[in-house]
Image (cartoon, rainbow, N blue to C red; front, side, top):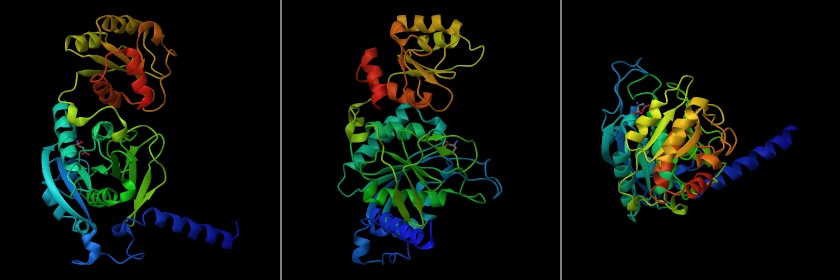
Length: 373
Ligand code: ASP
């Protein structure tokens, strides 16, 4: 490609990128537009964003700056986190609200419901334009998927975390929070479902998963991010294809409890007693995180069939981390009356199954739900 054509293509790309963010006055890079001044009309147009604090590493602190992976999570209050990133208040009117101060591994159904209901309440307020939730990274993908399926609003909801505490060298929380507020303030984020922002990327709550224990580049989706946040710009390249938020049959305001759904992890020499334990514990469904394409060991078939005979729904998933589990492939699902997850990871299939069971206990309808969402 000659230099002139390349330069023309580059400027065309820059023009279309800035068109994407044109309505978001506060998000243009300083070189493209001056930062809003206090008391001006520009400031009056700033979005109102509520930042809900739940804990996690983004609220963590270590003993020294070199503690990038060993520290205490969930200790810094959300207002203090906001105050430590003054750039945030330049792009939006932000208000902090502490709902929990926990590591995200401590999320359970009750806490998930409490968070979802509070977010829903805030989204109904006309003076709230978007929500940012600070959250631990361990289960951010479960919370984001849950909200993505149950909130009934087009307003942006962005879940954000960090891999390093604010006290660490190379801390990532401040920029992640700034980026999350930019994304939540941007009208282009409306109607895209619950988003997860970390490491300069905007991911969809449906697909995102944590893939590494300590690296800042840990969040990924098999299909790539929806976009980037760079130099104060929110750049979208894709939109979610599966129904979410206002398009689903699940409404957080109408759900007061979630049924018990167990995940049983498969491995060589897996113990069939884990299936019985889940049934005895009152599981209404078991997501079997099977090997490969949902393969079930010969000695595990009978225990799973026995659980199904007791009325427990069986969902074949894969522990591989991505890919579609093929119905009637590795196992005769029609014959056993089992369900397959489509491409959903076991921990996310658990969320979808719990929600689906609030609507139906018919295995065929449940299978449709898995194929739909
Ligand atoms: N265990 C922490 C949590 O999920 C890890 C993190 O936030 O990165 O709360």
